Length: 232
Image 1 (cartoon, rainbow, N blue to C red):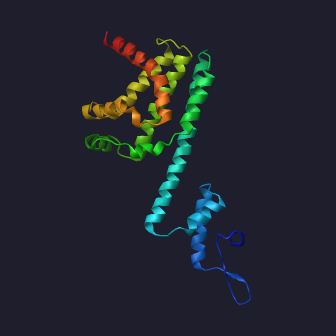
Image 2: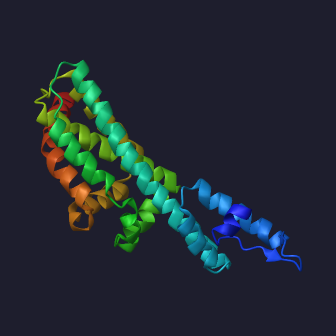
Image 3: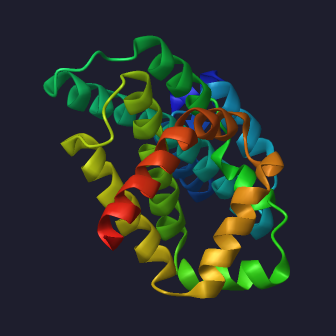
């Protein structure tokens, strides 16, 4: 506690002899300091947060802000992992890795603010549909990451000139179908809502727009090819 006292974060009460004394209030504040420290906050950030109100609304707002910050970091890490995974797949299959393309996409995706979707202007009926389809916040992120992974793979495969008839691309197609089916499951309203989001890319982030522009043309060819082959 003395360390935090010296830093001006947890100021002790001094008795008549000048000795530091701490109360239960200090102990509760110490647990909060340790919590913020475990999240990776600096001492200055912790000090500012402790000076804020302790009301339920203030605490909830702070916890939400921290969750968003960590979610952004997590999504950035996942984007890099997806880049590594597709690079290993290409290398194992004997294709050149599109270093520059992947570096650019991973960098822009890392800077994306995933929480921008919380401000997306969904039509009321579509919002109701998505609430029904995605029962939890985690389900939304799982879908988002799978969508992003498959578009990233498509962009990389196109850059590496992977033939559409290859095993890599067939696997990509199957994964795409699995993802779409898991969300729509024959639900026409869900499919229509997703298509409306797809057609309104002005609300997408820069990284998402960049990614889709590089991966969509190849993926469209893949879907058309394998859909036709399946229907024959």
